[in-house]
Amino acid sequence: MLEIRGLEVSYGPVAAVRGIDLTVGAGEVVAMIGPNGAGKTSTLRAISGMVPHGGTITFDGADCRGQSIEGLARIGLIHVPEGRHVFPSLTVHENLQVGTTADGGRAAMFTIDDVYDIFEPLQALRKRDGWALSGGEQQMVAIGRALVAQPRLLLLDEPSLGLSPKFVQTVYGALKTVRDRIPMLLVEQNTVVALRHSTRAAVLVGGRIVLEGTAADLADREALVASYLGEEPALAAEEVALERPAD
Ligand SMILES: Nc1ncnc2c1ncn2[C@@H]1O[C@H](COP(=O)(O)OP(=O)(O)OP(=O)(O)O)[C@@H](O)[C@H]1O
Ligand SMILES: [Mg+2]
Image (cartoon, rainbow, N blue to C red; front, side, top):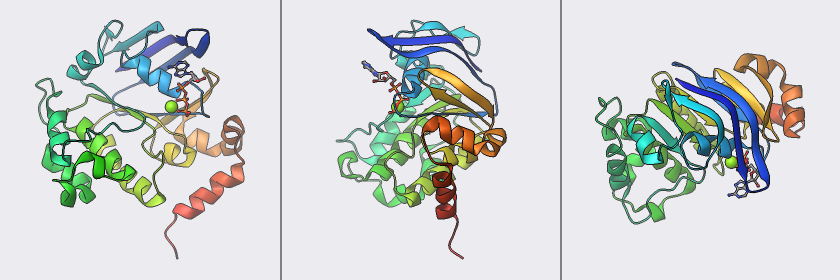
């Protein structure tokens, strides 16, 4: 569905992405993990036309170059950017209604009511203004708004960023019902979460893919992945322990 070949992104003299190849096929959730500044967000921005790029990006066989983010949304490539971007002066419900305007006439796979089913905490917040939502609530609205745009491919940039473990579970629990239906390219700094919720993963360091494999492969090579991320493997293990329900 999405095919990236030799992708390069630079900001003036800063080479953020230095020639990466990546594909996301139907039925796949591909995770990109990597330390701060690795080029993850830049990759997503290039895909959705927010920054110029070298190399080629095709979505369903069509070249993405020169297309606007709105144009790509209309053909079903929907980006939930880093930092959520909920409309502050619109209510939760109105934010979701805005999402439906990008559906490009595709059949409704997710209605606004489905979003309230998937993200139950939003039900009681329908009339709440965007500015008065917590970070986790905003993240649910941002993803919900993407779903009602009827994505054919979802780009998600760090959905767990800044969320408490409980909200991380809520957001990823909800994504479970989505990932069976919509392929995703998922950027995530939380390795444990990324590998648990993806089918394949790539580790990005300094704008290059240094390691790639099935999520199970990379979970088995936890120590190596952690070393690329500059983490202690034991820390990742501790996180797993924290996520388990108390006995
Ligand atoms: N608008 C910009 N102008 C100049 N340099 C930028 C710009 N945006 C990003 N960069 C640089 O490009 C590199 C890659 O940034 P990017 O945001 O893609 O990283 P990331 O992997 O998403 O990191 P993080 O995990 O911190 O979000 C970094 O060195 C960053 O400082
Ligand atoms: Mg980023």
